[in-house]
Length: 204
Image 1: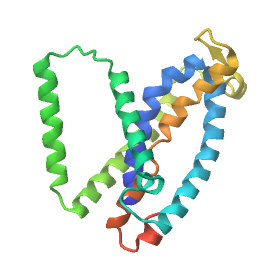
Image 2 (image 1 turned 90 degrees about the vertical axis):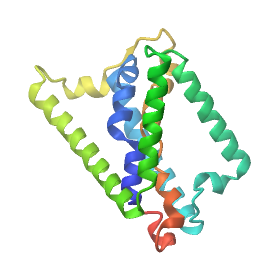
Image 3 (image 1 turned 90 degrees about the horizontal axis):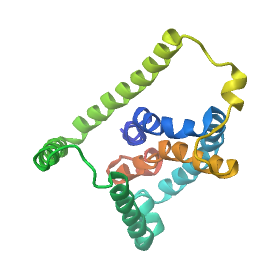
């Protein structure tokens, strides 16, 4: 269950699709590919470090507990401010529609939280299978339907700066979509206190 919980928290399909246009506009495919390669390497190092800490301190608070209350509060506050800025208060829905969506989401989460742990595990497994199959299906469809394919040179070296900023700065902000996609991989540690043999199973 820890793996599927992490996998659904990372949500590869949604996170990549949201940042796809942004990445191509801030650096192009060359910056995107190399930022993913380098980012993957450093993300694995961070993940291994978190796994070691989780094996020693298998607590439900995970990274928030390990770093202390001040860091946890600052992180949560930054996330709330970031979400507010992203939403920007703009919506094409009426107030009633927004309230209706909020009520529906609350009911769905209430029903899910009322389920047993094993039932929630099955829901996470289904979500993980859905995400993996969706990603594989998209890759297959693109390979089959694409009228023409880029060469390896174009993929790894083609750059594009659609921002007007210096290229070095564009490379730095182009990495943000990769960072967004790799966030949430510590989610399994939040289940550590509810896991049997948490010191060994919680970090896997």
